[in-house]
Image (cartoon, rainbow, N blue to C red):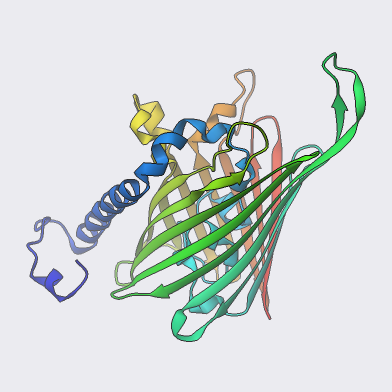
Length: 344
């Protein structure tokens, strides 16, 4: 499709201006790639789609990048130095991330603490590789008996180790894969899982358009916290972003949680699968970001003005260092996330 024979294909939008025609073609690519990913994952999707909210590995849904968190939970807008975004789509790894180290810290609710460390390096003809470690610690929790009486204390934690590899293909297309080893511990119980990601990115430099698709957390639990097997939070994502021609602004749309898309019965249901993102690049040293995820809008309180679903933040580039901050509203609580990156 992207080879020489592509030029001989009849243009399906002959009356459209060049940039609009490319945008329409890119939108068609999103639909085609989504169908491919859904088809490849269907065997796993059918038993898992209804169980994702009960997953013993739900911590994998936490944002691994402050930049992505500020954009509403999307990595559709590319950044050549944000190594943490390879967890959203392994194809985001690229040669410009060589020797980049990224550290993320999230101040979650109550005593919960979450963090992420990632490092990337070019590996010659194999492409670009990265390794990342995520953790979530739940603090100390009071144990209670069946009557609700205190009965000691226990702790809980989650850990995931990820390695990824990506390489260029042709005509602006890049592909990548991730392998995850995931561990969860609650008191004396623990669970272990293995999972795989696969991703594609198509960048069109002339039109400043990027189309991407990814299949995330395809795998299974090897051991579970209880008698019922824990499920992984399987996700299929598709996105498109566009840099405006006369403004330093990038707009993006991400479709996520596509395994549950067949359950859509209304416009409200369909809207819950969309993330809208904007990044204003005021200069090479300062970026402003905002995003909206309608899925998180379900946390909204009806009794007051509520920003549930909205993310916002900024990025600063200072010499060798890159600092990103994100504010994410979960209605009843605001989360603050920081990412620091540097080249070693």
